Length: 432
Image 1 (tube, one colour):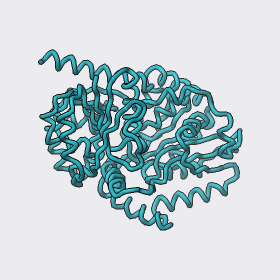
Image 2 (cartoon, rainbow, N blue to C red):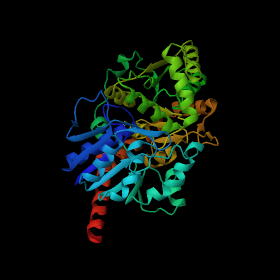
Image 3 (tube, rainbow, N blue to C red):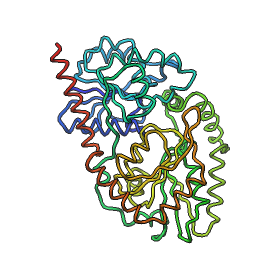
Image 4 (cartoon, one colour):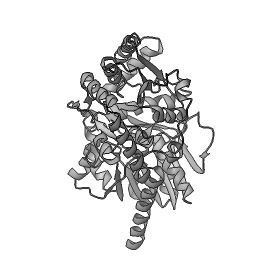
C-alpha cells in the first residue's frame, strides 16, 4: 500500500502524537508499504526521510479557529494530486486536518481519521468548529479512537457516526524488551535501597508534577528512604524561526484551550527572564521543603529517551496525576517496563488500568471543563498503601508486562491498523 500519514509535528519534534505516528510509519515500512508523512516544516529537520519514511513538510501554522497561514494551497494540491491508497490524519484542531476540509471530496484515497480527544470541545471559541465537524467526519471511511468512553467517541455516537474502530495505544517492544541498567540509580545519585517514585510529562503545569510532589512530601513512608523523579521538558525552546514559535504556541492552545494558552504565554515569557509564577513557583517551594525531610529526595530532570526507559524500569511505582489527557502513553510504558502504576481517573486511564492489569486508580474530582483535580492527601494515602504492599506491586507489574507483550506492543498495534486499511481498500474495490 501507498500510505500517507498527516500530523502537525513529526521528528525531530518530541511528543505523544509524534511518537505514535513514527512508531506506526516505521513499522508500516518494515511490512513493505510505501509511507510518507505530511507535517510542519522545522529548520531542525535536516533530511527528507527517516528510517525509510519519506517526510513531506509544509510551512503552515494555525488551525480553523485561530486561522491558518502558509503553504495551504500547496498542501491541498499535494493531497489531491498524489495517488495514495490510504490517507490517515491524526488529531483534530490542527492544520493537517483542518486544511483538508475544502478538498476532502476530491480525495480518492481511503480516508482514516484519529480524532485524538477533542480537547477544545467545551471551549466557547470552538463552538462553530464542532458544529461543522459532524459533516466533516462523515466524509471519512473510518474513525479510529483510543478509548471506548471519551468525549471524542461519544461525540461521534451522539451524531450517529458509527464507522469507527477502537485501537489502543502501546509501548515500543524494541525499547522495553531489554535488561534493566544496573548503573541507572548511580547515574542519578539514588541510593540502592531507596524506593523510587516516577512521574513523567512536560512541565506545563497540567501534567501533575506539583500534585505528585505535594503528595510525596506528606506521604508517611514508615521510615523507608525514597526518591521522587520528576521527569519532563521545561517547555522552553529556542525557536529558529517564527513558524516554529507559532506552531508551538498554537499547539498548546489546541490541546488546552484559549484560556490556558493565554496564561501559558504569560508564564513562559516571565520564566524566560527568570520569574517563576503559579505552579512553577509552588513546585520549587515544595521541592525545597521535601529536601529538608530526612530520607526523602527529589530529582528533577529531562532524561534522554534511552535513560527515560531505564527510569521506567528502575522505578518501584509510577505515579500519574495529570489534569488533562486522552490516552496517556506513559501508562502503557509503565506496564511495558513491568512497573506498577498509580493514576488519577484522567482520559481513559481507568480503561488502561483494566486492559493492562498494571494499575490502581486513585479517586479524583473532575471540574466543569473536564480537568481532573486530585487531593494530594488522598494521593499520598494511595502511594503509601502501595509502598507497603510489595506483593500487590509485584502482581500488578507482572500482569502489566504480560498483557503488554500480548496486546499492546507497537508491532501488534500496527498490524491492527494495517488490517483496517486493507479491509477498507477491499470494500472500496468491491464497491467500484
